[in-house]
Length: 519
Ligand code: CTP
Ligand code: MN
Ligand code: MN
Figure 1 (cartoon, rainbow, N blue to C red):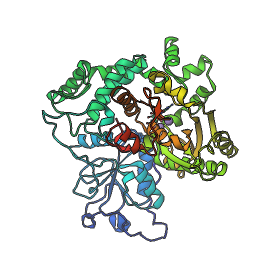
Figure 2 (cartoon, rainbow, N blue to C red):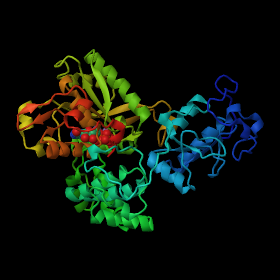
Figure 3 (tube, rainbow, N blue to C red):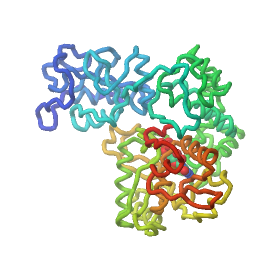
Figure 4 (tube, helix red, strand yellow):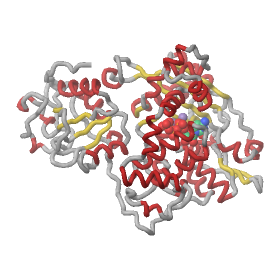
């Protein structure tokens, strides 16, 4: 899309708004490359220079957004330079943003920054869209920021860390994103080949690196760290020496990995189905259509909404989903509680879906509400796909099962759905032609109040953190933990808990808050 003509527009009140962000007003002398002369610029625009990163945003969208901002009186530079105060990125994690900043010459985005002369502040697109809607730069809030600097420490030779990920704090933004991305690519590739053991080895090594207090710079620093096997060490060594891993790069470029990733990204398609299609010579969604592949109802919905579902869910989507879900739930069951869980509870800014737990303080009232909740959403035309399951949990029997069975799936009443979520500013917030809605994957899980802390702990993730928590319980404490309960199989007794903290106490573990469970 081509940028519109560069017009200068006043703020909503017809006059310039007061400066809402702490930008230094003294540096207004720098001449603007892209806006018209500073004499007619709104007062807030002095000392504020935006730069939009093309990567993950795309060239045409970047051009469109740049034009939009200029039309609203923002200075937007096309080239990155030290004059830039605000860097805007889309679909970019804080780790990726930090890496980008490093590549620009050691810049570290941070809270105190965003003034001329200092390093720029690294911002998510949400700050940009909020500012466009307001017609001026809105104050930077925590949720807008990508580049909060991490306190970094040298990893000494005597450094050690506990073996289980649930015994460690793992922040969302860590010091070794390039290394962990390589290892996680290899983990993903192994999982796509059905080799879970191999996949787990790479995941464990990546998880160890995520918990390090600083960047790993020498192989010798791995001494004494848990779960860095020979293969992972080799990958890390190559990354440290050459800055790249041939194996990870090779995987990323391989036909097999690309096709398997594309297929398994379809909602409802697992490794087996994807592998079958690959063996038949299929490579793209177009191939699926052409060959007239028979799809399940779930997969059909997955293909229909493929583009939307692979676009990361943003915080604004989470709020929109919460509003409609909460309204429907409260209509069906007044007094119910809705809790955000999953990756967004761990502080992620982007996710593949939105996860909610639903409960009611009076145990039993919650049972069987989902069909009515979904009907309520359906009557508003908001349901694009849904699959609701009844609760099939029967306590002692389920817990007496061998540990491996109880480890993976829980048995709550639940709904895997795709909802139609409205987006406030379609021209800015969506790719392609303007549309005022987007398909979003939503998981709803209903739990009796007495199981709520276990469900919350089990559904907050990360998946690796959960796996480790259960392994720790089993191996170190001889207890069985799942999303319903904590069970002592020897004594045949349950250990009840009124909070997540209490579950950690039962296990003799230090409490790890959700934001530090990004193992
Ligand atoms: N989970 C589960 N049973 C399922 C699906 C998920 O117990 N059938 C748990 C997993 O432990 C996972 C958490 O719920 O950690 C959230 O799952 P998911 O939405 O798949 O992952 P997120 O961590 O939320 O990541 P994303 O942002 O990609 O959604
Ligand atoms: Mn999720
Ligand atoms: Mn989910």
